[in-house]
Image (cartoon, rainbow, N blue to C red; front, top):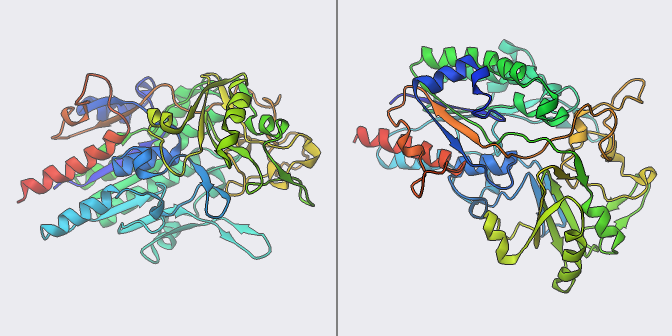
Length: 455
C-alpha cells in the first residue's frame, strides 16, 4: 500500500491554486473537488471534522473554545485528543488493521488535538510555563527524543512565527521540512501535516489587503522538500484546506451589549476587570463570525434575544433545536448561537472603560482570553519597544485593512496518483460540493480500500 501524506494548507482555495505551481500540478495529475465549510469555519472545528468524518454536534468540538460548564471556565485552543467525542480516523484505521493482523502507523505533525492522540509520531507546539509566569517556547512530541532530534537537524522551531505579531512563513517552512524528515525516516502509512502560512496576513489585512499570489507562492515553495520526500518514498499526496477568508469591516461587541443590558457581570481587581461566568446571566464566547451565548436562566432568553437581535452586524440568533440547522446542537454549545452578517465579526471585549481592561487584553494570551483576539497579530505602534498587541477596539488605524474571519469561499481537496479519483469526493445526495467532513470519510475509505486489496 502506498503511504499517504495529507497536507492541510489552511486558507488555500480553488481560486488561489493557479498561484501554486507544485500544488496545482498535484491537482492536474489527479483530481480536485471543492468542499463546503463547517460552521464555525475555524481551526479546531474544521480539523476535528476532517479527523473524525463527523459533524460538530457529533464530535463535540463546537469552536476554537467554549464554556466548560462544570468548572465555569472558558477555554480556547485545548490540545487534548480526548476532547473529540468521535473516534478519529487514525484510531479507526489502527483498529481495523489490527483486526486483520496488519499494522497501521500514523504521524501527526502540528494538527490540533495532538496530545494523547493514538499515533506513532507526533509533533506539536507546546511552551514551558514557569512558576514565576515565565514562558519558554518549545515543541513537544512522541516518541521520546523525536523533537530533540528534529531540532538538532533543522534548528529550533521558530515558535514566534507560529502565532502573534511576527507570525509568518518560517513556521510553515520548518513544519514542511520536519514532515519531510519524518516521511523519509519513518515512512508512516498516514502523515498529517498542518501548514498555517495562509492564515496570517489574510487575517491581518483581509484578503483584499494582502498580496495573496505572493503568499501562495511562498506556501508552494515551502512544500518543495515535503513533496520531494513524498516522491522519494513512493507515497501519495492529498491536500485539503479548512477554510478561506472574507473581508470584514464591522466589529460587533456582544458582551458590551449584554453588560449594558444588565445581563453580564464582571469582577474588578488589581489586574483589571474579569468576566464573571458564574454570576453573569448571559455572556458570549466570540469566535470570528460565530458566538456561543450561554444563559444561566431560561427565563432570560427572551430578553437576551431582544438585545442581540437588535445589534447591527448580527445576522441570525439560533436557539434550542434551531442550532441543528448548522449542526451545533450540542451540550457544549451556548443556549444561543449568534451568526454575524457577512461583513461583520464578533469581538470579545466586555469592559467599557479601556483603563479597566484586563491585563491580558494587550498581550498574546490565547488560553485566558474568553474569545478569539485577532489583535494579537499586531504590535502597538505607540510602544517604543513593541512587545504587546493592542486591545481589541473598533478597527484601529494601524490595521492596514479589515480584519478577516471565517470562510465564504469553500476549501478544496485534491490529490495525485490516486486510484480513488474524484468519485468518493462527490456528494451522494446532489452535485453540490461535499463538506469538509467528507475529507475524513475519504481517508477512511482510502485505507479501507487498500486493506481490502490485501485480504
